[in-house]
Length: 108
Image (cartoon, rainbow, N blue to C red; front, side, top):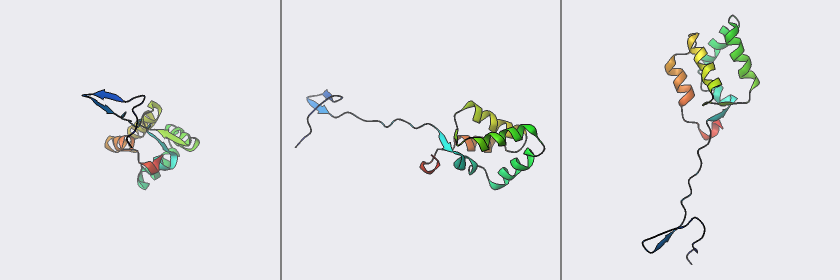
């Protein structure tokens, strides 16, 4: 038995076609754990070490510890990672990779 045409169906050349459903794109939000593991252990250790001597890095680290998720498209997240680049704790290439790598289902 063929489905009956209904709302959203199209009609062209004497043929009904069902609606095409496109899944909405999900925001680039990942968990704190997923964000942490986008950094290598050496990069993360460097951040922790730098936080002991640099108040700006300490602010980033404190913020990291307060939140439960990171929106990779957020200007605040981008600015925080850019600050780590300015402190030579990350290269620009690594920062770009951390912020733009596709979000995996296990990171949500």
